[in-house]
Length: 177
Image (cartoon, rainbow, N blue to C red; front, side, top):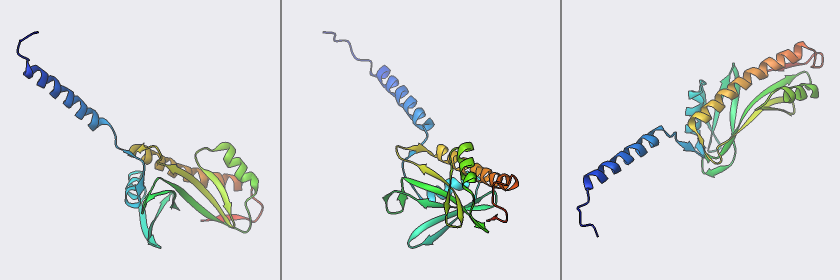
């Protein structure tokens, strides 16, 4: 058995170095979120470069914003607790003036675009993109997803203009924002 004294100074220095490394790694590791409330999402929308207006309706906060001059809203998904959600849908609806949009417009979008889908709801053509926080994502990922959404809204407008110019729409129909 060795009766030599233990060098506690060296052990403490090693522990201090380990703690410093762990603290530095923690500072570099981005926060992971698996749910969000209206205030947190409004902050992320602003960080993505859009203004946002919270409106309380039926004791629930609705978020309205715009990209490329066209309004969109947040449709809340699965609640993990009151006012906190694990997913949501970004939705941009435009009214079709003078008729329905032919299915070729929807098919063309779905063939050529990713990330967001088109749907028809009566006289509305709706661009939608689901955002899920299940399993956890970083705020940076959320902000990037919101910037992608704004880009998709711009692509949506260009696509509709192009479709109208190419005659894919029935004569006499127009899309009104």
